Amino acid sequence: MHSKPSQAGVPVVLLYHRIGFPKLSSLVAGQYVAPPLFRSQMGYLTARGWTVASLDSVISDRQPASNMFAVTFDDGYLSVYEHAFPIMVERGIKATIYVVADAVGGLNDWDRKAGDQAEPMMSAAQIREMADAGFEIGSHTLTHPHLTECDDDELRREIVDSKRKLEDIIGRQVSSFSYPYGDCDQRVIAAAKDAGYCNAVSTKLGVVRDCGVFEIPRVNVRWNAFGPLLARKIERAKRASGL
Ligand SMILES: [Zn+2]
View (cartoon, rainbow, N blue to C red):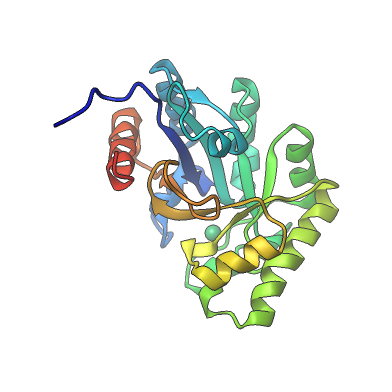
């Protein structure tokens, strides 16, 4: 027996990495979302009744009356500041940017070690400018390791020191965390809680319903996700969360 479909909305967290035209020479070409596509994705969802909200609101309101989405970016690439930041300011979107603290003003060394090409990262001044504009800055560790493979000391350093380092840059508390590669287990989650974070996001596909606040699933948005494909991916995320 099916009950009447619920009128509750769906809360989702979108995950972006790089903004720009896909570089086919990159190992992760699918991670580039072209600026016009990013703009049209934001417009597509809002034109269909979705409300854009901060990560905090999406996490705290897990049974919203209407569909809502938060925007997050992992790593802290310069291309996010250059291309997505102006679009979001124009549309009043306040995203969360998870920054690799040791890479500020440098390059994506973890991608390069895996054989990918160099990409510049945001500078401290750019990160501060986004924080001052109301964007949330979260931590994505110091060096982007696989946290489940770190020993306890490394784990603490990556999680605690990155928080302090980013707090020094923005002059505010850093309370959100993102696990590199979505790699986490109970030990990693406990370390993030101990460090004083309030929430953490993974890369698992899903919507924000019936999940722990230290295992928030997201919808990874890729280079080809024009409106209908993005909508289909959100449908998949709903099914993954049992909706
Ligand atoms: Zn990452």
